[in-house]
Each structure stands twice: as C-alpha cells, then as structure tokens.
Length: 396
Image (cartoon, rainbow, N blue to C red; front, side, top):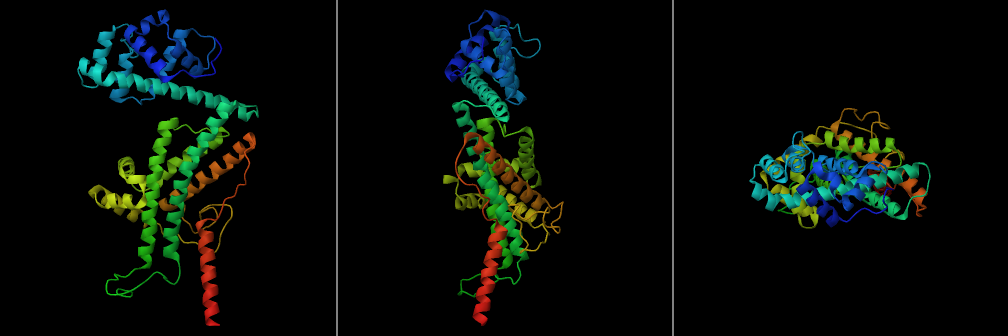
C-alpha cells in the first residue's frame, strides 16, 4: 500500500482505538482499522509490511510519548503492550490499567479512558506531522520541490521559532542592560532622597540595574511558557536546514535553562504565573510574583544570580557579528559566568534561527530584506555619544 498523502481525522482514529482496545492486539489481524492503518503507513514510512505491524508500531510510539510514569504505563496496559498482557481480555486489561492509576475499573472507564484514547489519537497525529516534516526536510536538503501543504507547515514552524526568538531576545537584552548599567561611568541614575519632593525616596544606579534584571525575569518566564507551547504543539522537535543546526539550537535552548537561576520547579511556577496573568502582561506578572511567598523567593534568587556577574568590557568596543557582548569578542567577559552563559546562548539561538530562515526563504523564494538590527550595546553607545556631544556643546 503506498504511503497516503492525507492523515486521518482525529475522531476516526479514536473510533479505531476504541475497537482495538476492546478486541486486543492478539486479534489485530482480523480487524478493520482504516484510520490507524493510514496513520501507521505515514508514521513508519512503510509501504510493504502487513497492517498489524505498522498499527502496533505506531501505537507503541504514540504511547511512548506519554513519557512513562503511571499514566503512560496505564495506557500500555490498556492495550496489552506490557509483557504478559497481550492476550488478556478487555476487562482484565482495563482493570490493570485502572490499578496503575489507583482507580477502580468503573471510574477509569468513565473518567479516564475516553481522555486517554483521545490523547493517544493526538499523539498519533503528531507523529504523522513529524514524519511528513522529516520527508520535506530530506527533500529540501536535496533541493527538491516540496508540496505546498508541507511548505506551509514548515513556515508555521518558523512562526513558532520566532515566537520564542522575541522572548529570548528580551532575556539577552535585559541581562546585558543590567550589567552595562552597573559598568556605566558617572552613576547618572543616582538621586538622593527628597530630590524631587518630600515623597521622593531617591534612586540609584543599582536600582536602575535591578529593574533590567526584573524585566529579564519576565522575559524568561514568557520564554518558558512559549517553549512549553512549542513542545505541546510540535513535540519539541526542531526541524531546520540540517542536523547540525538542529543540534545547535537544541543545545542553545538547554544552556539558557542550565545557566539561569532556579530549577524545573521554579520554571513551572513562573509558567503558572504567566498563564494566570491577564494578557500575560509585565505589570500583572510582577504583581502576582510579589504577592506570593514562592514568587518572592524566586525573584530574590534571580537578583542574587544576576549579581554574580562580575564581567567587564569596553562599552564602546562593539561587534556587528553578535547580538550581545560575549567572550568571543570581549576577552574580559568570563567564560564561566552563568549570566553571560545565558546571554551567549540567547545570542546563538537568535543567530541560528536567522541564518536558517535565510535558507528557508531562499528555498521558498520568500521576499523581504533581512537585517540583524541594532543590539543593546550599539544603542547604548549611540546614547552615550549623543549625551557627550550635548554636554560638550553646553560647555562651549
């Protein structure tokens, strides 16, 4: 059977999964499973194997995407995928699946099984989409034409990549501004108590820097939330122009997390706060963070982490080859600074996505100019230059 062009609808997959759950894998050769068969051919890329082979392979791959644990193990038991359960009847398989979730069989049947089957069907469709994207990827590497539907899917992925790009750029910009403010000569932000009236509490260079660090935390939280959406939508699969670029982007994303303050639990909390903030706005996010004991701890640890950066560099020595100042062009930036580890990883992600977009735009003949734009160092240097010129003009 040739590999189909169109993947099956979700409801058809759920219907086939219900039938397969009832009859069991031991009888799969005798069943009519049209939707699962189509999906199996797409997922495996296998035109010749018997139907039961591609169906079972696809089912296993879909359930593996649950990541194990009680839920994934329950799904495997429901279909007899665990050793010793293949020939069990539907009642026994359901009972074992329910036990793994510490529920009764009746509760499992009513409340858990319908959702589980729908989620398995969703994972099957995700596998179909990923396989079709891989096929397009291979054709593009050989400079062969790709179907219009695949081109659209490819471009949608870049919409997701650039959705992440915006927040990653914010992280790099604000962390760079944080350290640059502390290095800035003249302490222009210092203002003594009462300078602007009796209610003026004063201000300092450090206060200004902490504001940038706080904005960086917001951008980091938005980035974490968007990354989770990307994982949900695309399975976290990066499809770029070649394997080296995919590996480099994956590495950059991991290093942003690894070098940043906090851990998986704090990142989860930040995503929850973003989720609950109306329109995910900065002001609402900071208010909710300050109103929570956990949020206060996370913010304090973030500021303490930012303060570990002791790197210095010439604020006027700029490079057009990078988004943010890094150790590659500034020797005094420390290699093992975690703050600059995040900044460097952010810059690498931006560059990798930009470079790959140029290739994709070329393949699809997408028109429009491309430019890196000004980085924060260039904007800051321009501002300082103009301020010095104005000051010199006033002296004259």
